[in-house]
Image 1 (tube, helix red, strand yellow):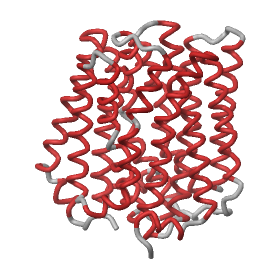
Image 2 (cartoon, rainbow, N blue to C red):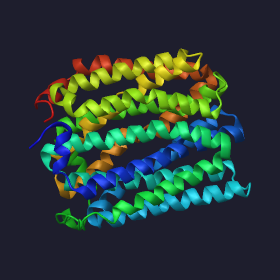
Image 3 (cartoon, rainbow, N blue to C red):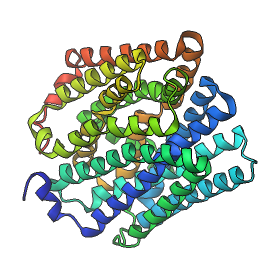
Length: 408
């Protein structure tokens, strides 16, 4: 089998088309990520309200084990379409309410909950699709492609979203997101049938959600990497919840400039995603995770102290640079260790571990910002991140993560 990016030649064309469609959907979601915090700030001017909105948008993550069970037990195409329809309908409703000047803070919070729920449902179904359709030697390449496209969408879209908000308002940004979600539905119909994987009979007649959790715990390297990713996501979420507030309250940046900051900051994550298929097989997982925490924590410190746009740009680039390598590692470890009949449910539990603390982190960040300022709250998150990077190689998990060779 070919290595590096050449391994993509062994993957189905329909799968690559789905990842491109997913990137288009993520591009639209970038408009949503900037538009809704911008709207909430306009309505309230409150860091606490921004933290609460971000927290609500991540609550659907807690239901991912159930979403994963649905994905394992029904047609993956049907699950993808249902998730995308929920997201599209929510975005359309928000745009209509805003056009009619009837969009309240409560409606915005509800929209954040539903739209994000649809997006993470589609992501879970996409992960199952990747696991079922990708040959083992091509996993790093296909995961690298997914994360590279995701990072390009994540950073390019807010830049364009800033100009769209400045020119057409928040309503225009929501319409772009809805159109992007609709476009993503097209590649779904190109996928093969992918019938449900038959589950084993439930113990004593009960359908247990515990079996996939046990499978995750037994795959010790997968579990350890997932927890570390979740730890980093917790501290990252605290910083992310306050970024728009800091950009507007301290740096006084207009919407187009906020988009430019995100665009330039995205260069580092995209480069790391592009080189991941060649770098990851040469680095032990434990050192990759440790370095990721150190790099991201350093960026959080820089952002907390930033007083101009270019310092903030460097900081955001450092904070997010490690997302793709760590995400590729966690996905590849899970794909090679978890059986297909449980994969969707295990992905759900992984998402709970990785993102379940995000609502709490966002709320705590808003409360801390009120008490100590946005910079003080970010410094607290940075301290936790740097300590995690220091302690990981000294913990028992180092042996767990080094039991297997680097990813191939």
